[in-house]
Image 1 (tube, rainbow, N blue to C red):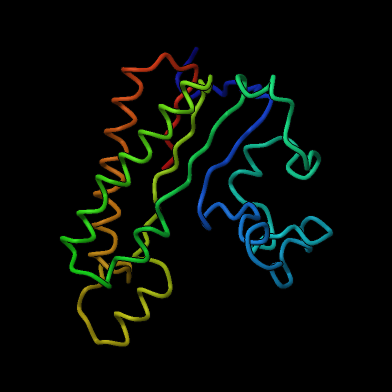
Image 2: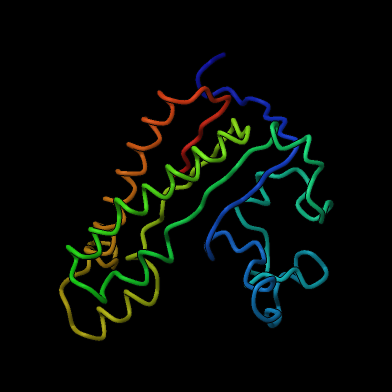
Length: 194
């Protein structure tokens, strides 16, 4: 295969494990219904989402709104398992505790990833897609809190440097885990999205 050449991925199912960054309706399932627009502009009906349109997992799936039910268990072995987790964990500690304490939780988070991948592998999962975290320091809330405090902690893009430094540490440790797992497990597909 030529590098960069598109390759067909015929997964029979996609299972997404994610936080609010992958907004697949978990908040509605656990708590109360999400108020409008909750997906109705794009999907034509309430979708139980905070977002009003499609998200990354929808673009990965062929027909995101066609099958509302879980696939047949026979399809579990030929599924893609995606992880988009960690954003909320870091967002809730960065800026609220000293940076060294925020950095100290990262190895535990990475260990949880490792444990989840290994458990799913033991159950037959062979294809994984792991999402890195985006630059949390570029999100509106941390930027506004730093700007309103008159701090000089912004980078040339107006993003909070120490937030993004912590995210970079997380992403590096996650990348190391992916390389380790690739070497230890017999996988069909192991993708890291940045």
